[in-house]
Amino acid sequence: MNINRNVQTLDEFTIQELRDVPNATGELSHLLRNIGLAAKRVNVEVNKAGLADILGDAGTINVQGEEVKKLDLFANNQFIKVLSHGIACAGVASEELDDFVAFDDSKSVNSKYVCLFDPLDGSANIDVNVSIGTIFGVYRRKTPVGTIVTEEDFLQAGNQQVAAGYVVYGSSTMLVYATRRGVNGFTLDPSVGEWSLSHPDIKCPEAGKIYSVNHGNFFQYSGGVRDYIHACQRKDKTNGGPYTQRYIGSMVSDVHRNLIKGGIFMYPGTTDKPNGKLRLLYECNPFAFIMGVAGGKATNGKERILDIQPTELHQRTPMFIGSKLMMDELETYL
Ligand code: AHG
Ligand code: MN
Ligand code: MN
Image 1 (tube, rainbow, N blue to C red):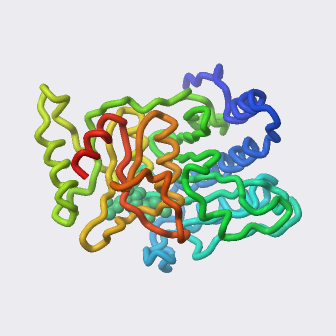
Image 2 (tube, rainbow, N blue to C red):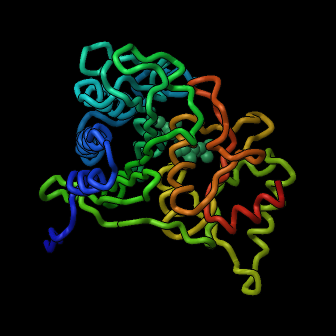
């Protein structure tokens, strides 16, 4: 096996970045390191999912009314454990928890960040060995350091994110995170268990040829969305087409592919579910932030995802995200 070790690790990279930011305390680097650690633990379980007794349903339904998988719970517990033991996180909110959790020990209340996450995205794909992921967003708390965090710290618009990222447990395991300074991707080198910088300064191509949507819901979409889908299908060589349809059903993998190759991902509202399926705080906002820093766009069809002022932890929103020029065209249909 020929593994390139002449690359920066995640720790080296975040410390290097820190040196360029005056007055930085290193807390964010610490938080990212913790997220990387929890993700490595999840990765170990994901990799042996077919062998260990970790596949299948946990036998419970979460606050969203969805079936919980054993791996959902395992991932959720890993992230909470690691973040609560660390010194950089004052509290968390998760897809798998009814309410946020405020860490009340003395080191946590003195932390300045809160973290919101979807511990395992693409649950329906767990049992069939298809790529799944983790999504996270980090905010500076609104309440004073030294106190216990409140709901106000979690209900912030996405444009307040300090950092956001995701992990893909795929053919290789990757951690991608963004700060306002850029988007960078790290591949897990399994031989040494290190996240190694493999995709520096990711930019989303302005145009692409991939559109990703659940076609099964086609007749439940608005006229504008249906017209846009038809336009994607009608494109020919003269106008950059034809587009290719790709939809894995794990948002992390679908948006990751479109971020790298150029493309558009949509989870529109339907007649049954006008707000769609995806959750604003820990699914849409992190990706909208990452895509924005990478040069792309994200909207709910009416306004930028990042500008939506949340009112509930688990609120849902329609989501359209991707390459800038494709998004500009989509917006003429919505
Ligand atoms: P989760 O597993 O965290 O509940 O999220 C699954 C989401 C998302 O990853 C994916 O894009 C979408 O559900 C797929 O939904 P449909 O099967 O309705 O297309
Ligand atoms: Mn999800
Ligand atoms: Mn999930």
